[in-house]
Length: 254
Image (cartoon, rainbow, N blue to C red; front, side, top):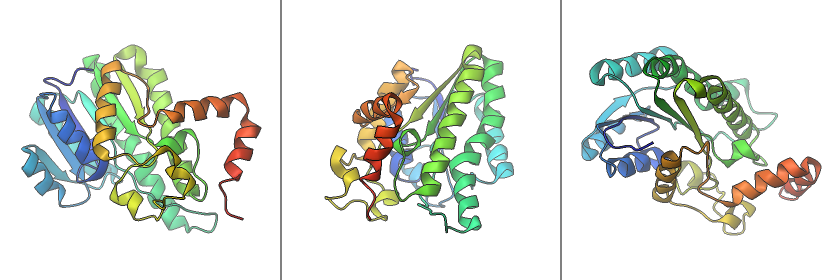
């Protein structure tokens, strides 16, 4: 997709990858950019960029639906929707149901709530792009992050199914799957210790991820992989699942 003259909506747009995507997209001369976030600071961030900002909890179906319909009524159509909002509740078997529900609502259901509004809209226009930020945890896994990895796998399955069901009706779908990115969500976890196994492939800036996203959208690749090593990892996983699982177990502290 060429982003020139396109109408773009980004969730999780107040900071991190979402904010970087907006800043990068503006270099491509879009018609409009709209930022959605639960953080009220999204209004200030949007104003500084000269775009529209909306304070919305994406896990609230009615609020998200209302906002998306409001944007459509204002600009006619949404060409690119970046379903980027997410939370990193690592989770274990002992994690509370409340925490699991919260992670599921944001990391999975928010994409579904948006798709319910936008996929019919895109099908009617015979054109549209739905991008979901899945992370490499959805393609591979993440030891010690049970609820995060599980919900990201679900988000990947959703994206695959949307592509299968609506790809012949003008709807393009991609998943953005970086490994570690220098965002508040990651820096607050303690994963950034230089000796941590996940640091082996490098820590990318949100700007680097945004650059790779633009390239992936231009090529309309389903998999957008800012860390190219991830492609080798998923190929190895598919080639020998048991060997892959054994290798991942080595990352688990005894």
